[in-house]
Length: 208
Length: 208
DNA sequence: GTCTATACACTGATAGAC
DNA sequence: GTCTATCAGTGTATAGAC
Image (cartoon, rainbow over all chains, first blue to last red; front, side):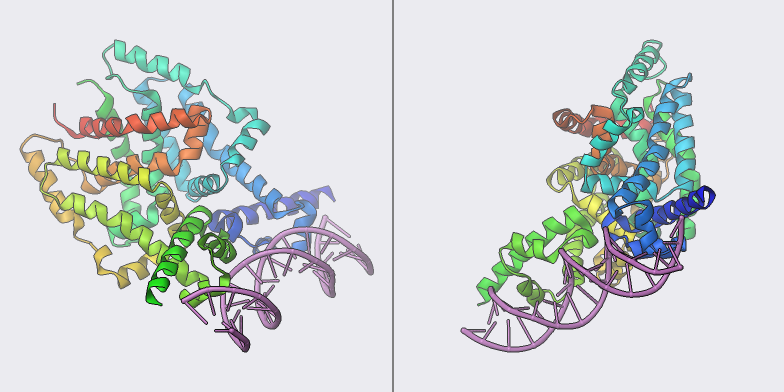
Protein backbone atom coordinates (compact mmCIF):
# COMPACT_ATOMS: atom_id res chain seq x y z
CA UNK A 1 0.00 0.00 0.00
CA UNK A 2 0.93 3.60 -0.41
CA UNK A 3 0.79 4.27 3.34
CA UNK A 4 3.15 1.42 4.03
CA UNK A 5 5.41 2.46 1.18
CA UNK A 6 5.66 6.00 2.47
CA UNK A 7 6.58 4.71 5.87
CA UNK A 8 9.24 2.35 4.54
CA UNK A 9 10.69 5.06 2.36
CA UNK A 10 11.02 7.33 5.37
CA UNK A 11 12.61 4.62 7.46
CA UNK A 12 15.13 3.99 4.69
CA UNK A 13 15.98 7.66 4.31
CA UNK A 14 16.42 8.10 8.06
CA UNK A 15 18.67 5.08 8.27
CA UNK A 16 20.62 6.08 5.16
CA UNK A 17 21.08 9.60 6.48
CA UNK A 18 22.55 8.31 9.69
CA UNK A 19 24.93 5.83 8.09
CA UNK A 20 26.07 8.01 5.19
CA UNK A 21 26.68 11.02 7.41
CA UNK A 22 28.70 8.97 9.83
CA UNK A 23 30.72 6.85 7.40
CA UNK A 24 30.60 8.68 4.10
CA UNK A 25 29.64 7.34 0.69
CA UNK A 26 32.47 4.84 0.40
CA UNK A 27 32.44 3.78 4.04
CA UNK A 28 28.70 3.16 4.25
CA UNK A 29 27.32 -0.33 3.73
CA UNK A 30 23.94 -1.08 2.24
CA UNK A 31 23.62 -3.93 4.74
CA UNK A 32 24.00 -1.55 7.67
CA UNK A 33 21.42 0.83 6.24
CA UNK A 34 19.01 -2.07 5.70
CA UNK A 35 19.54 -3.33 9.25
CA UNK A 36 19.03 0.12 10.73
CA UNK A 37 15.82 0.55 8.71
CA UNK A 38 14.58 -2.87 9.81
CA UNK A 39 14.36 -4.27 6.29
CA UNK A 40 16.64 -6.20 3.94
CA UNK A 41 19.02 -5.17 1.22
CA UNK A 42 16.76 -6.16 -1.66
CA UNK A 43 14.13 -3.70 -0.54
CA UNK A 44 16.67 -0.91 -0.48
CA UNK A 45 17.34 -1.50 -4.16
CA UNK A 46 13.64 -1.70 -4.82
CA UNK A 47 13.13 1.87 -3.58
CA UNK A 48 16.42 3.42 -4.69
CA UNK A 49 17.96 1.47 -7.52
CA UNK A 50 21.58 1.99 -6.54
CA UNK A 51 23.71 3.05 -3.62
CA UNK A 52 24.68 6.20 -5.50
CA UNK A 53 21.08 7.21 -6.04
CA UNK A 54 20.26 6.72 -2.38
CA UNK A 55 23.30 8.75 -1.44
CA UNK A 56 22.35 11.56 -3.80
CA UNK A 57 18.95 11.81 -2.16
CA UNK A 58 20.46 11.95 1.32
CA UNK A 59 23.03 14.52 0.25
CA UNK A 60 20.43 16.72 -1.39
CA UNK A 61 18.27 16.72 1.73
CA UNK A 62 21.22 17.63 3.94
CA UNK A 63 22.27 20.36 1.55
CA UNK A 64 18.83 21.90 1.30
CA UNK A 65 18.61 22.02 5.08
CA UNK A 66 21.73 24.14 5.49
CA UNK A 67 22.42 26.29 2.48
CA UNK A 68 19.13 28.13 1.86
CA UNK A 69 19.18 29.36 5.45
CA UNK A 70 22.02 31.70 4.66
CA UNK A 71 20.05 33.23 1.82
CA UNK A 72 16.97 33.76 3.98
CA UNK A 73 18.98 35.46 6.66
CA UNK A 74 20.82 37.72 4.28
CA UNK A 75 17.61 38.77 2.56
CA UNK A 76 15.78 39.82 5.71
CA UNK A 77 15.13 43.45 6.55
CA UNK A 78 17.56 43.98 9.38
CA UNK A 79 20.63 46.07 10.09
CA UNK A 80 24.05 44.50 9.51
CA UNK A 81 24.59 43.98 13.22
CA UNK A 82 21.15 42.41 13.61
CA UNK A 83 21.76 40.19 10.61
CA UNK A 84 25.04 38.93 11.98
CA UNK A 85 23.53 38.20 15.36
CA UNK A 86 20.57 36.52 13.67
CA UNK A 87 22.73 34.37 11.40
CA UNK A 88 25.12 33.27 14.13
CA UNK A 89 22.25 32.51 16.45
CA UNK A 90 20.28 30.52 13.91
CA UNK A 91 23.26 28.72 12.41
CA UNK A 92 24.66 27.62 15.74
CA UNK A 93 21.22 26.37 16.79
CA UNK A 94 20.94 24.48 13.51
CA UNK A 95 24.42 23.04 14.01
CA UNK A 96 23.47 21.92 17.48
CA UNK A 97 20.60 19.94 15.99
CA UNK A 98 22.60 18.56 13.04
CA UNK A 99 26.27 18.54 13.98
CA UNK A 100 27.31 15.96 11.39
CA UNK A 101 25.84 17.59 8.30
CA UNK A 102 28.45 20.29 7.62
CA UNK A 103 31.35 17.83 7.80
CA UNK A 104 29.38 15.46 5.64
CA UNK A 105 28.70 18.08 2.98
CA UNK A 106 32.23 19.47 3.04
CA UNK A 107 33.83 16.06 2.81
CA UNK A 108 31.70 14.63 0.05
CA UNK A 109 31.92 17.84 -1.93
CA UNK A 110 35.71 17.71 -1.75
CA UNK A 111 35.69 14.13 -2.96
CA UNK A 112 33.32 14.98 -5.79
CA UNK A 113 32.92 18.71 -6.51
CA UNK A 114 30.88 17.83 -9.60
CA UNK A 115 27.93 17.09 -7.31
CA UNK A 116 27.52 20.80 -6.64
CA UNK A 117 27.22 21.55 -10.35
CA UNK A 118 24.59 18.85 -10.78
CA UNK A 119 22.74 20.21 -7.75
CA UNK A 120 22.76 23.71 -9.21
CA UNK A 121 21.47 22.46 -12.53
CA UNK A 122 18.68 20.42 -10.97
CA UNK A 123 17.62 22.95 -8.39
CA UNK A 124 17.31 26.62 -9.25
CA UNK A 125 16.81 27.41 -5.60
CA UNK A 126 20.54 26.93 -4.95
CA UNK A 127 21.78 29.05 -7.80
CA UNK A 128 21.97 32.52 -6.36
CA UNK A 129 24.80 34.39 -7.99
CA UNK A 130 23.34 37.74 -7.09
CA UNK A 131 22.95 36.83 -3.45
CA UNK A 132 25.56 39.38 -2.47
CA UNK A 133 24.37 42.36 -4.45
CA UNK A 134 21.82 43.48 -1.88
CA UNK A 135 24.13 42.73 1.02
CA UNK A 136 26.95 44.64 -0.66
CA UNK A 137 24.71 47.68 -0.98
CA UNK A 138 23.62 47.47 2.62
CA UNK A 139 27.22 47.27 3.81
CA UNK A 140 28.21 50.27 1.73
CA UNK A 141 25.20 52.14 3.04
CA UNK A 142 26.20 51.60 6.66
CA UNK A 143 29.80 52.49 5.84
CA UNK A 144 28.59 55.81 4.48
CA UNK A 145 26.56 56.39 7.62
CA UNK A 146 29.68 55.81 9.73
CA UNK A 147 28.26 52.76 11.49
CA UNK A 148 30.76 50.18 10.25
CA UNK A 149 34.18 50.32 8.66
CA UNK A 150 34.60 49.33 5.01
CA UNK A 151 34.59 45.57 4.72
CA UNK A 152 34.32 43.07 1.85
CA UNK A 153 31.01 41.19 1.92
CA UNK A 154 32.33 37.78 0.85
CA UNK A 155 35.16 37.86 3.35
CA UNK A 156 32.71 38.89 6.03
CA UNK A 157 30.23 36.15 5.21
CA UNK A 158 33.00 33.56 5.05
CA UNK A 159 34.07 34.61 8.52
CA UNK A 160 30.55 34.55 9.96
CA UNK A 161 29.79 31.08 8.63
CA UNK A 162 33.30 29.77 9.26
CA UNK A 163 33.38 30.86 12.89
CA UNK A 164 30.11 28.97 13.45
CA UNK A 165 30.93 25.80 11.55
CA UNK A 166 34.63 25.31 12.24
CA UNK A 167 34.36 24.35 15.93
CA UNK A 168 31.80 21.73 14.94
CA UNK A 169 33.54 20.08 12.00
CA UNK A 170 36.92 20.24 13.73
CA UNK A 171 35.50 19.22 17.08
CA UNK A 172 37.59 16.09 17.66
CA UNK A 173 40.87 17.88 17.17
CA UNK A 174 40.00 21.09 19.03
CA UNK A 175 38.43 19.16 21.88
CA UNK A 176 41.49 16.90 21.98
CA UNK A 177 44.22 19.53 21.75
CA UNK A 178 42.63 22.46 23.57
CA UNK A 179 40.42 20.67 26.10
CA UNK A 180 42.33 17.47 26.79
CA UNK A 181 39.42 15.53 25.28
CA UNK A 182 37.03 16.66 28.00
CA UNK A 183 33.60 16.35 26.39
CA UNK A 184 31.74 18.32 29.04
CA UNK A 185 34.28 21.12 28.88
CA UNK A 186 33.86 21.34 25.14
CA UNK A 187 30.10 21.49 25.41
CA UNK A 188 30.47 24.36 27.85
CA UNK A 189 32.86 25.99 25.41
CA UNK A 190 30.35 25.72 22.59
CA UNK A 191 27.54 27.06 24.77
CA UNK A 192 29.32 30.31 25.58
CA UNK A 193 30.80 30.65 22.11
CA UNK A 194 27.66 31.96 20.43
CA UNK A 195 27.95 35.28 22.24
CA UNK A 196 31.70 35.38 21.80
CA UNK A 197 31.43 35.02 18.03
CA UNK A 198 28.81 37.76 17.73
CA UNK A 199 30.88 40.13 19.85
CA UNK A 200 34.06 39.19 17.99
CA UNK A 201 32.59 40.02 14.60
CA UNK A 202 30.72 43.16 15.56
CA UNK A 203 33.71 44.48 17.48
CA UNK A 204 35.80 44.01 14.38
CA UNK A 205 33.60 45.89 11.94
CA UNK A 206 31.93 48.59 14.00
CA UNK A 207 33.26 52.12 14.09
CA UNK A 208 33.93 53.26 17.64
CA UNK B 1 69.37 -3.31 -1.21
CA UNK B 2 68.73 -0.71 1.43
CA UNK B 3 69.04 2.16 -1.04
CA UNK B 4 66.41 0.61 -3.25
CA UNK B 5 64.20 -0.16 -0.27
CA UNK B 6 64.36 3.42 0.95
CA UNK B 7 63.40 4.63 -2.46
CA UNK B 8 60.48 2.23 -2.81
CA UNK B 9 59.27 3.06 0.66
CA UNK B 10 59.24 6.75 -0.23
CA UNK B 11 57.43 6.12 -3.49
CA UNK B 12 54.80 4.12 -1.63
CA UNK B 13 54.31 6.79 1.01
CA UNK B 14 54.00 9.53 -1.60
CA UNK B 15 51.48 7.54 -3.58
CA UNK B 16 49.56 6.52 -0.45
CA UNK B 17 49.48 10.11 0.75
CA UNK B 18 47.98 11.27 -2.51
CA UNK B 19 45.32 8.56 -2.73
CA UNK B 20 44.33 8.54 0.95
CA UNK B 21 44.06 12.32 1.14
CA UNK B 22 41.92 12.43 -1.96
CA UNK B 23 39.66 9.45 -1.32
CA UNK B 24 39.87 8.78 2.39
CA UNK B 25 40.59 5.51 4.15
CA UNK B 26 37.51 3.67 2.91
CA UNK B 27 37.56 5.13 -0.60
CA UNK B 28 41.23 4.45 -1.29
CA UNK B 29 42.25 1.27 -3.14
CA UNK B 30 45.50 -0.55 -2.57
CA UNK B 31 45.63 -1.21 -6.30
CA UNK B 32 45.55 2.50 -7.08
CA UNK B 33 48.30 3.21 -4.57
CA UNK B 34 50.42 0.43 -6.08
CA UNK B 35 49.85 1.72 -9.59
CA UNK B 36 50.73 5.27 -8.59
CA UNK B 37 53.90 4.04 -6.88
CA UNK B 38 54.84 1.96 -9.93
CA UNK B 39 54.82 -1.35 -8.08
CA UNK B 40 52.30 -4.10 -7.38
CA UNK B 41 49.98 -4.80 -4.50
CA UNK B 42 52.07 -7.58 -3.00
CA UNK B 43 54.94 -5.20 -2.43
CA UNK B 44 52.66 -2.79 -0.62
CA UNK B 45 51.85 -5.49 1.89
CA UNK B 46 55.51 -6.38 2.14
CA UNK B 47 56.39 -2.89 3.38
CA UNK B 48 53.23 -2.10 5.33
CA UNK B 49 51.44 -5.23 6.41
CA UNK B 50 47.89 -3.90 6.12
CA UNK B 51 45.94 -1.04 4.57
CA UNK B 52 45.23 0.28 8.05
CA UNK B 53 48.90 0.41 8.98
CA UNK B 54 49.78 2.25 5.79
CA UNK B 55 46.95 4.67 6.45
CA UNK B 56 48.09 5.28 10.01
CA UNK B 57 51.56 6.19 8.77
CA UNK B 58 50.16 8.64 6.22
CA UNK B 59 47.82 10.17 8.76
CA UNK B 60 50.56 10.60 11.33
CA UNK B 61 52.81 12.37 8.83
CA UNK B 62 50.01 14.72 7.81
CA UNK B 63 49.15 15.41 11.43
CA UNK B 64 52.72 16.12 12.47
CA UNK B 65 53.06 18.60 9.62
CA UNK B 66 50.16 20.75 10.76
CA UNK B 67 49.58 20.56 14.47
CA UNK B 68 53.00 21.27 16.00
CA UNK B 69 53.18 24.52 14.02
CA UNK B 70 50.55 26.07 16.23
CA UNK B 71 52.56 25.23 19.30
CA UNK B 72 55.75 26.75 17.88
CA UNK B 73 53.98 29.94 16.96
CA UNK B 74 52.28 30.33 20.31
CA UNK B 75 55.52 29.75 22.18
CA UNK B 76 57.54 32.38 20.35
CA UNK B 77 58.57 35.66 21.98
CA UNK B 78 56.27 38.06 20.21
CA UNK B 79 53.44 40.41 21.09
CA UNK B 80 49.87 39.15 20.67
CA UNK B 81 49.41 41.15 17.47
CA UNK B 82 52.69 39.86 16.06
CA UNK B 83 51.79 36.31 16.98
CA UNK B 84 48.45 36.52 15.25
CA UNK B 85 50.00 37.97 12.12
CA UNK B 86 52.73 35.33 12.25
CA UNK B 87 50.31 32.44 12.72
CA UNK B 88 47.91 33.54 9.99
CA UNK B 89 50.78 34.17 7.61
CA UNK B 90 52.47 30.84 8.25
CA UNK B 91 49.29 28.79 8.37
CA UNK B 92 47.91 30.18 5.14
CA UNK B 93 51.24 29.56 3.42
CA UNK B 94 51.24 26.01 4.75
CA UNK B 95 47.66 25.55 3.58
CA UNK B 96 48.60 26.80 0.16
CA UNK B 97 51.23 24.06 -0.07
CA UNK B 98 49.02 21.32 1.41
CA UNK B 99 45.39 22.25 0.81
CA UNK B 100 44.04 18.72 1.20
CA UNK B 101 45.56 17.88 4.57
CA UNK B 102 43.18 19.77 6.90
CA UNK B 103 40.09 18.26 5.30
CA UNK B 104 41.76 14.88 5.41
CA UNK B 105 42.60 15.15 9.11
CA UNK B 106 39.21 16.60 10.06
CA UNK B 107 37.27 13.98 8.14
CA UNK B 108 39.18 10.92 9.29
CA UNK B 109 39.19 12.17 12.86
CA UNK B 110 35.41 12.53 12.77
CA UNK B 111 35.06 9.02 11.42
CA UNK B 112 37.40 7.67 14.09
CA UNK B 113 38.13 10.04 16.99
CA UNK B 114 39.97 7.22 18.74
CA UNK B 115 42.93 7.84 16.42
CA UNK B 116 43.70 11.05 18.23
CA UNK B 117 43.93 9.26 21.56
CA UNK B 118 46.29 6.69 20.10
CA UNK B 119 48.36 9.46 18.55
CA UNK B 120 48.63 11.23 21.89
CA UNK B 121 49.69 8.04 23.64
CA UNK B 122 52.32 7.21 21.04
CA UNK B 123 53.69 10.69 20.61
CA UNK B 124 54.28 12.94 23.59
CA UNK B 125 54.97 15.82 21.25
CA UNK B 126 51.26 16.19 20.56
CA UNK B 127 50.11 16.12 24.15
CA UNK B 128 50.33 19.70 25.27
CA UNK B 129 47.62 20.35 27.79
CA UNK B 130 49.42 23.38 29.17
CA UNK B 131 49.83 24.95 25.77
CA UNK B 132 47.51 27.76 26.73
CA UNK B 133 48.90 28.69 30.09
CA UNK B 134 51.61 30.94 28.74
CA UNK B 135 49.35 32.41 26.10
CA UNK B 136 46.67 33.08 28.71
CA UNK B 137 49.17 35.00 30.80
CA UNK B 138 50.35 37.02 27.85
CA UNK B 139 46.79 37.95 26.92
CA UNK B 140 46.02 39.04 30.48
CA UNK B 141 49.24 41.03 30.55
CA UNK B 142 48.31 42.99 27.44
CA UNK B 143 44.78 43.48 28.74
CA UNK B 144 46.25 45.06 31.87
CA UNK B 145 48.42 47.33 29.73
CA UNK B 146 45.35 48.50 27.85
CA UNK B 147 46.51 47.13 24.50
CA UNK B 148 43.75 44.61 23.91
CA UNK B 149 40.30 44.02 25.34
CA UNK B 150 39.68 40.99 27.56
CA UNK B 151 39.33 37.92 25.39
CA UNK B 152 39.27 34.16 26.01
CA UNK B 153 42.38 32.45 24.66
CA UNK B 154 40.73 29.28 23.37
CA UNK B 155 38.01 31.18 21.58
CA UNK B 156 40.62 33.45 20.07
CA UNK B 157 42.81 30.58 18.89
CA UNK B 158 39.81 28.75 17.46
CA UNK B 159 38.96 31.86 15.49
CA UNK B 160 42.49 32.41 14.22
CA UNK B 161 42.89 28.81 13.02
CA UNK B 162 39.31 28.53 11.81
CA UNK B 163 39.45 31.68 9.70
CA UNK B 164 42.53 30.28 7.95
CA UNK B 165 41.36 26.72 7.45
CA UNK B 166 37.65 27.12 6.73
CA UNK B 167 37.95 28.70 3.25
CA UNK B 168 40.24 25.82 2.28
CA UNK B 169 38.24 22.85 3.56
CA UNK B 170 34.95 24.39 2.44
CA UNK B 171 36.39 25.60 -0.85
CA UNK B 172 34.03 23.74 -3.21
CA UNK B 173 30.94 25.12 -1.59
CA UNK B 174 32.15 28.68 -1.02
CA UNK B 175 33.61 28.86 -4.51
CA UNK B 176 30.38 27.48 -5.89
CA UNK B 177 27.89 29.60 -3.96
CA UNK B 178 29.81 32.86 -3.57
CA UNK B 179 31.91 32.88 -6.73
CA UNK B 180 29.74 31.06 -9.23
CA UNK B 181 32.40 28.32 -9.40
CA UNK B 182 34.98 30.69 -10.84
CA UNK B 183 38.32 29.10 -9.92
CA UNK B 184 40.44 32.13 -10.78
CA UNK B 185 38.16 34.41 -8.82
CA UNK B 186 38.48 32.17 -5.78
CA UNK B 187 42.25 32.11 -6.02
CA UNK B 188 42.23 35.90 -6.09
CA UNK B 189 39.91 35.83 -3.08
CA UNK B 190 42.30 33.59 -1.15
CA UNK B 191 45.29 35.74 -2.09
CA UNK B 192 43.84 38.90 -0.57
CA UNK B 193 42.30 37.11 2.35
CA UNK B 194 45.48 36.77 4.37
CA UNK B 195 45.56 40.49 5.09
CA UNK B 196 41.82 40.63 5.62
CA UNK B 197 41.92 37.96 8.31
CA UNK B 198 44.78 39.62 10.18
CA UNK B 199 43.01 42.98 10.12
CA UNK B 200 39.71 41.38 11.07
CA UNK B 201 41.13 39.71 14.17
CA UNK B 202 43.31 42.57 15.36
CA UNK B 203 40.51 45.08 14.80
CA UNK B 204 38.30 42.95 16.97
CA UNK B 205 40.58 42.63 19.98
CA UNK B 206 42.56 45.87 20.03
CA UNK B 207 41.58 48.77 22.25
CA UNK B 208 41.15 51.95 20.25
C1' DG C 1 5.93 -4.54 -1.38
C1' DT C 2 8.74 -7.70 0.89
C1' DC C 3 11.32 -11.65 1.34
C1' DT C 4 15.29 -15.51 0.43
C1' DA C 5 18.83 -16.91 -2.33
C1' DT C 6 22.34 -16.00 -5.29
C1' DA C 7 25.13 -13.97 -9.06
C1' DC C 8 29.06 -11.35 -9.96
C1' DA C 9 32.76 -8.16 -9.32
C1' DC C 10 36.15 -6.34 -6.46
C1' DT C 11 39.33 -5.90 -2.62
C1' DG C 12 42.71 -6.88 0.87
C1' DA C 13 45.87 -10.13 1.79
C1' DT C 14 48.97 -14.30 1.19
C1' DA C 15 51.82 -18.17 -1.06
C1' DG C 16 55.53 -19.19 -3.50
C1' DA C 17 58.91 -18.57 -7.41
C1' DC C 18 62.83 -15.80 -8.64
C1' DG D 1 62.98 -7.13 -2.64
C1' DT D 2 59.95 -7.90 -6.24
C1' DC D 3 57.02 -10.45 -8.99
C1' DT D 4 52.70 -13.60 -10.63
C1' DA D 5 48.93 -16.11 -9.26
C1' DT D 6 45.37 -16.90 -6.33
C1' DC D 7 42.34 -17.20 -2.17
C1' DA D 8 38.87 -15.85 0.99
C1' DG D 9 35.82 -12.42 2.21
C1' DT D 10 32.78 -8.78 1.29
C1' DG D 11 29.78 -5.66 -1.32
C1' DT D 12 26.37 -4.23 -4.69
C1' DA D 13 22.86 -5.69 -7.25
C1' DT D 14 19.33 -8.89 -9.23
C1' DA D 15 16.07 -13.07 -9.86
C1' DG D 16 12.25 -15.04 -8.49
C1' DA D 17 8.83 -16.74 -4.94
C1' DC D 18 5.16 -15.04 -2.09
